[in-house]
Image (tube, rainbow, N blue to C red):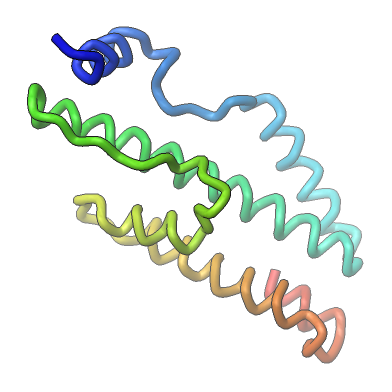
Length: 141
């Protein structure tokens, strides 16, 4: 048995090697911080909350993709399927969404919600100077 097969079996046998949030306790702190920031109704509060929620969503999508990839590898075992890293600094949220869309699944709700989130992030962050007032920013968040 080669390294690919051995590693896949070891991963399957050890749930601690499965995709998961590295620091779920900290995610709860971030979630609370984002809620508090949004309630301040300030520019920095809206932006902080939005960016925190977007990053949490990105991490969720990464985990779903990693688990789906593992499932695919196990489905065709002993054939090999190798994937590139999702932790590459060039991996944008848009690219992650493209990867998520390529996974076989019936319900597109998650993909649709993430696309909306990405569109809002682009409109908010890249076009912030075009907003008329704080309410415009709040509505995008």
